[in-house]
Image 1 (cartoon, rainbow, N blue to C red):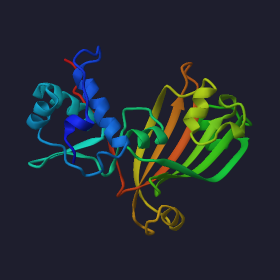
Image 2: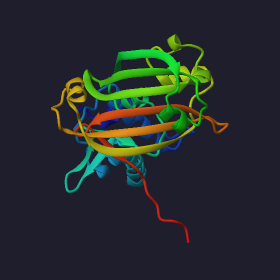
Image 3: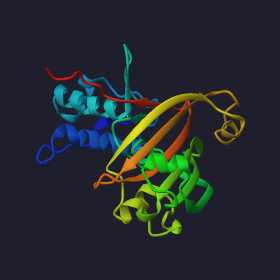
Image 4: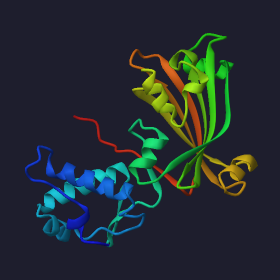
Length: 247
């Protein structure tokens, strides 16, 4: 690995805090693949000396990136660029945003795009009346040519101008329409992949999988999105920061 002083830059005269500059530099290095999955970062003391910053600055920057899932700490070994995908369950981001932030290249293969009306299950989940128009988007999601998940999304018809408004990123299309969800309820469930899921995800029938169900809500409190995503259990980790209730 080249000297960190050459690939990571911080500027003491910049108004942004040094630890945030360092986080931004590390994210950029991962995105440009200068830092690859499983690469080890130098010890924090060495990083501080190379970059002429305090160890506290380095520790704070790394703590934040570990929380995001970009870096992992291995007891007795140090800090490493994450190889498995770690998704922060507390942050509402799209698959494409998650992959790009980790230096991966997202790609989607369309399985089905259609428009119709809500099913009884969708109507109950989205709190919609019978016959409400919806769009359905079924995709196989990739990261660096590796299939990561099967995604089945149902979008309320009023949230998008048309079926063809979605090109690559569903959330980008929703944002362009002014209807990107601002909060969501998510549920995580373990399962065994069936034959069709396993074939599409390049796994074996009966392998461990994860199902994430998400309902996304707009600022006015109305539901806009119901999404079911099936992940291979050996490629994805979901993390969440927990805190004890205040006394």
